[in-house]
Length: 498
Image 1 (cartoon, rainbow, N blue to C red):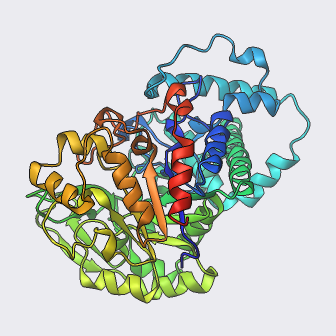
Image 2: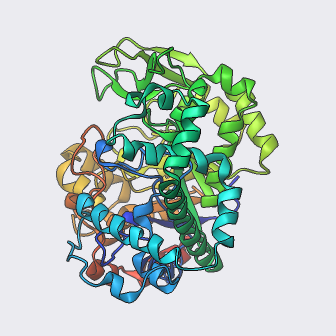
């Protein structure tokens, strides 16, 4: 599936420098793409771009729509350039910290600026592009706008706590609501128009410089989302539209009670009966956003851990098979050579491995996991990789390499690492040793978090699984952006034939 040896950097859009408190789709994103190009890289990996909220601690993996974009990523400066704002509209913006996102403060500013851009837009006559966007995206956009506005009207309550007629999508209630809140619905659609216009321009900028955008698809959907509200039949819900079972993972070495994620589980019989239409439309959206798509928790498409919704832990769940062959066959019928990476980290059973081989789906290798045991056949040691795989120093869920070296790797692990490398290793150079291992490996794709390129410690970690607070906020400062060792990375990349 992977045609040539390539490498790139993992950096979520929110982590880019910006004067407005959060990374966005504007000037700094283009600077980052230019830097990738100079450094000989041709991949930019990002996390999901879907709308986020405070209830889920702004996690990009708990979005309110599988199709919509995060409006807080819209660039204010680009809105000025596109004449949706005037320069004076940006006057008086508060001073934000450079090194992390203050999400509540950012959302307050961005909402005000988007309200102003909507006012400015209504003074213009060029509605044709926006109207065309609304028609083309109506299959998801209409429901998303209804959901987003209804949530505001109902004091941000989850859709299952709305008035019953609206909860159950009674046609008369939906029609009355649409008429009453027509202005708010149109503004919500306009914000999506702005997001996709800016994203499409940015992706084109990247592609023109031979940079491919590598994106992420969370396998599960958040219960309080436009998708579950609009398509309840596609999920295992009861007559009150509440989940009967939820997703998670069983107990393992890391957790005696497993992980109870709480996402509703797919009703695969209904999906199959509809010829997987919703999934195919979702994948179409992903392939519009990205050149390569990583399916997070891929094993859930083969068999998933299903837990009764009233349980407090994931202990008493069960494995349930999904119609993976029927589904993936349909995907390959619909898409010519879909560029999909399977996230296959953790405990992966033989049936998952067989499916990946059958459909030629590359998997992932993480170097941080390679030296924890004395096993020359460890699947994460470079000589054991398949060519069709993606090697990471670490992912967004891992500590940084320096943080791992200083705080997580025990003495035996570090001795095995040094024996493998044939040299002593320090906190000052461990990140370059692992970057070079990844670049020189057989894996056709190699990806490094920007934190590892810069040798940052664990204070720069993006996410710690199993914790709710303090995640997703890290940002690259302008000063750090200026000292990325571009020439060194370019030299190593060229020598590794990437």
